[in-house]
Image 1 (cartoon, one colour):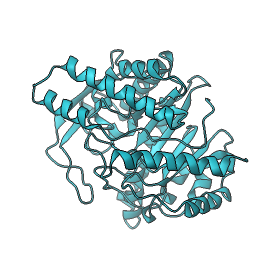
Image 2 (spheres, rainbow, N blue to C red):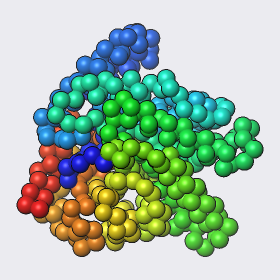
Image 3 (cartoon, rainbow, N blue to C red):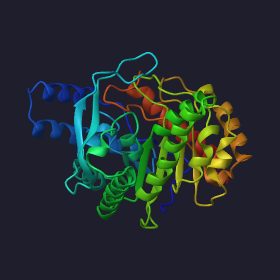
Image 4 (cartoon, rainbow, N blue to C red):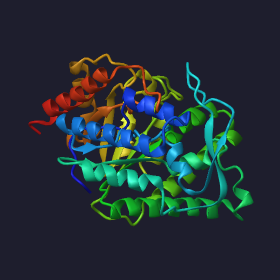
Length: 369
């Protein structure tokens, strides 16, 4: 496992105006793919330079080549197709585009997945940090009706889930072969399960459906990340939804803590920027006395530009230290700044103030540790 700092980033950043304009022109067929890629390359180089200037030890491409945090990757797998769901995701206070993914055949690893070239570009342009690759969780494919048609391609669900896990495992291994030593798997399924497990407490039949989804999620994730090299850091970000500074899900981590404690990740990014996240007690069960596991506390919101009270943040970290050793804790923003190309409602200047704030607080807290 790669040694990382006690501060970190989730990975997505606000798209610069030049990139937004270029993508708009590309979608209107005013510029070519080659011209769009040239502008993406230019802006990603600038982003990496900025990240390194701020002292980040792990950097990303800001997800600048993506439209969605999850769908672009899923569409790149063999056996997955793009389609129009015709309904917005149910964010509180915002409507999204209606793109989605569905099974179009047996799912399999794609050796020509476009994310491989994207990673190679980042890795070639990093100087003083490691390149971090973010991908969505495999659980996104067997939730929300995306693969209700699996019986068209498989005799049983386990065969489908095994193929999905194998496709992910091979994909991650190829990222490693390309030089990647830090993979982050972003996951909204667990926040979805928080809501559903709470909502169905008095309906045993419905509740059991979501218990099964949780158990299947543990199975597929752990199978996806098994037998990987020891120097590859595997992280997950448990996300409650992030679109134009709005959210999808609420609730504390209690209903899912026992499942997260079974996942074989090295780092858990947990959102703790609002009362919607509940208290810190579940982090003890999630950490599960694993010396190799770090709990990354997302105490700094990425949904607005206002800086938090540093004393209050330090107090929360002290509270967390009563549950998990300080050396097994880290600090980050609660989410990225642009889970979709639209981005959150704050300025680029505010975004960088937030990153500086995270680094400064972490350095103050862990400097003498």
